[in-house]
Amino acid sequence: MEISLSKAGLKEASIIHEMQIKAFMPLLNKYKDYETSPANQTVEQIEDRINQSYTDYYLIREANIPVGAIRVVKKENKIYRVSPVFILPDYQGRGIAQKVFSMIEDRYSDATIWELATILEEQRNCYLYEKLGYRQKGDTKQINDKMTIVIYEKCMI
Image (cartoon, rainbow, N blue to C red):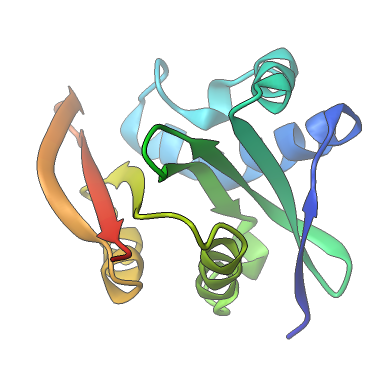
């Protein structure tokens, strides 16, 4: 499996947008979280994030085909946040996300803590993050009666 990351610029915003909708639409349909779902973001919102000085966006490629994206947000004190990360449905379950997290952790080797948020009810996602060494912080946010967001973190020191 040949996985690579390429830094995304404004030219890639529409590709990210299209993939993000495909990846998150099943969750939007399931949980009806119209306020927070990445499936509801506009291309302009993605462009704004790409332009942020504290954000790095990457296209995830398998054999040079775009299959997802990951955004790394640089916070204070060598704390980094992943928001969002996604793999297209046809490519999920193949170990791509695990490889991407390893690549990102290598690329940002100065990180002391990694953070991310996910849907508590999506057990496959929670299992993946826990397998990668992330632990629930205990912070949750009830989005609606079907969906709760949980915060995970991974300490690197």
